[in-house]
Image 1: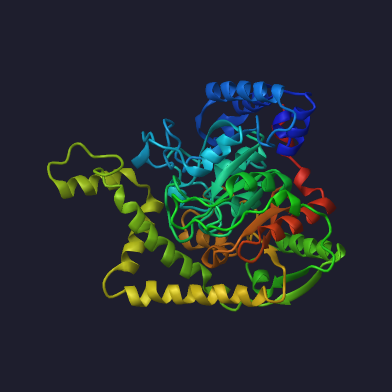
Image 2 (image 1 turned 180 degrees about the vertical axis):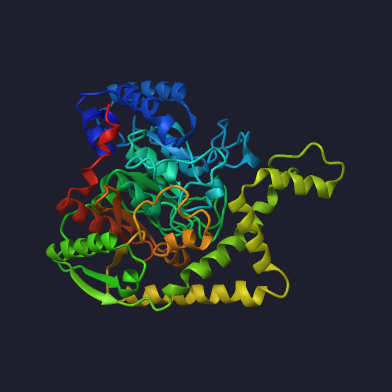
Length: 489
């Protein structure tokens, strides 16, 4: 196996035994990037020179230490929504095309502190708005399993890069499923932690009450290692939870005998692809075979998740994106002769169609006369959705179901129908509305060779339960070991 296809924990073991060096891993990563990046287009910015320097420094530390952090010398990449001091951060929007941040996001600093090696910034849907990664102003990302298909969004670049071996792990953000859905479509593991568990300081905001940072990795063990580095209280983020952070790797045990697992009947609704349904039901049987007790439950308000999400998310987006006006932030039209025209032209030129659509939707639902009818009512429905989950967790440890109703689809298949596109997040948005932690991990493939994802949802701040169930499932299956074979050098 090429080093770039290995996991964090496999590489850490080899580094500890002095069998490889960090510079060897970086060589393998950039060999893969140079070979396939023109086809996959997962990166916006590559930092090869910086990566080689950081790898050399890591090797020096490894030479002098016997017990070092599992992320020391491991090449990772950041979604281009994380601010990085002195390094271009675009959010894949023309309006931030040449933005150089003056400071670094807390999560990126945490990873730096562990000794990771940054290989670049990753492509994404503009301002994290999208389910297919077709909304980037720099062009689409292609799914490594089938380059005619989307990788999912908005963290499509992150998931595609990990699946393709262009980095060992990556960061993403999840507002309505933007980590879990691309993880499902690319065959990686993606975690959306409890809201407030990971700092959002220095992460460009889309919808502040929903956004959450998390890792995308090749397996559950790597996800636990990344979460150990990312999670924790940050006084710079007013929404950060000041709660103890456990060592997530200690939850990695294969035994789930007696665990109670809930399967919502609403997750097997009309529209669910039969191949996805078959794979997920087989996964539930696997968990049963490991000794778990499975029961059917109901999430009666789940059908209202998509409209509720798009009212709240667009309302918050229209407010957050007001700052990009050509004066405070962002691209400025230089031909305008007066202020209003300058605002209009700057935002017209700077934002793409999907961002404009969501700003208009959000402005409408917040406008006088419509606030009570839409925004206030959506907040009430959000409470009902949260209570549905809380009721189930009185009797069950976790909830499982499909991550996405379909496997990856072909480019252009849903772009003319925004509603059809929004429905691809139907199984993930409610988790964000409730603020719960969720994980997607590989659980099978379609007949055409596209990955299928299993979603595991846990109560607030109980990510350990996700890791326990996910690890036990991985221990009993081989799906997480599969890589896109046609990319091998």
